[in-house]
Length: 288
Length: 284
Image 1 (cartoon, each protein chain N blue to C red):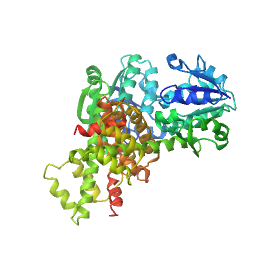
Image 2 (cartoon, rainbow over the protein chains, first blue to last red; image 1 turned 120 degrees about the vertical axis):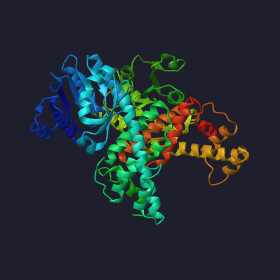
Image 3 (cartoon, one colour; image 1 turned 30 degrees about the horizontal axis):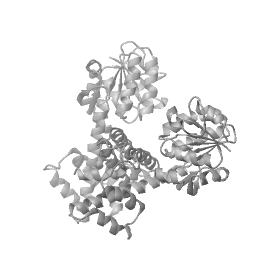
Image 4 (spheres, one colour; image 1 turned 60 degrees about the vertical axis):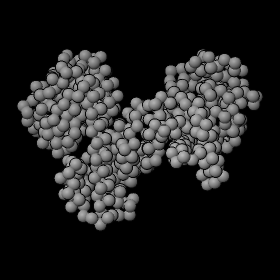
């Protein structure tokens, strides 16, 4: 398939590489020309603009930072006038923003799928991302071959915006999950109990989870390199909190968790992995 | 002086009347013409027209978007106001929005103060509002006699946006106190103790406050007819939590109170008083 790919950061670059490996013809565009270089070496073609990345392609995919960026590149995509084009945004943005962008693209005759991912840089490189999609069944079917090069667990959740709703739900669970593991470790340590043994014991029971296994191990190793930066987790939980505010939805646990990430960003830990919330807990309880 | 007023709701209307009674010439504009009825004022067709005929214009609106629309939008105040005139925005909006509006008006030589108020409808009627001002001190001195018509405590906090920061602090403390009071009332009732007596006893001690007096009474007699509409506090919490995350200030209590306000909205109690936070606890 002929695919345009916009946004070649930590996530976008390996995702685009996996499309090339899957045998697709890929055109790339990134704001900074030098981030296109590794893709061009792998066989991609350079586009001069987002519109250019859409032109003569069947599918165009964006993986950028925030809703205004998505809106901007999709305005370019819409202006390409490419008939039968399907546009896919795999960034994490607010469901309401995704629905608006979908409507704007529909007005230009472009089908839109919101398809945010979970699995981080590791999942992007391994092509094992979870992909949660919102949009029409027909558009999803057209994008599916591309999704299969990038991810393993690919679910069409529902109509436009449903993918972002799912991602927000994912961030609620992972955000609180990271905080829960960090609190359990702080609790064990303050009681003079070995955290590694606690983790080992818990992995056999109902508290077992990937977060306890992977993030828990990194907490034990005090390896706070991202991974997933805490400012990004804060940004994602802010999407949750703003949506809850608009809908009239009570999410006390998410609110408390968002505040912990907010405090991390405010105290200079924004660039560290979100598991560094453990350090904040330790500081608050005089364990540092 | 020739004064303009936009936003003639429960707060704005008595404020505008105080200014008119102090001997100033009043002009008004309202989105809904009905709200100008009975006012001794010239009614203008657009905010721009209002701006053209005034030396100082007051706005008292609901959201950042409302103020930006009326000031910077098509036919907005900014199109009509002359260099050297002053916009006094008494609305509660985001500090960032206040700074943005002040910046845009500044390009045209129009001065702006963010001057949100505390004291509610009764404070507006009695002209006893607390007014927290952001902007240049010299501009405040020019309009201080006008603010004296509206309130008793007028404090210059700092540059543009600082007034809105102070108002955010005010809302944070007040609504958290209402929530604390609701929890105390719930504890009293659940323990078989008379709420009214608890309230009376507390009034004399360290937990005594205006919130205890006013909101406490509403909770004791279960009268939740507004007062202050809870939907406005809900709006304010959206603003203040966003302002806190912009600067990375931790606000764990405000975050939880914000969730209680979300639940209150979900119950359809947004037009009732914020004392209704107690009703939420009674659902549990």
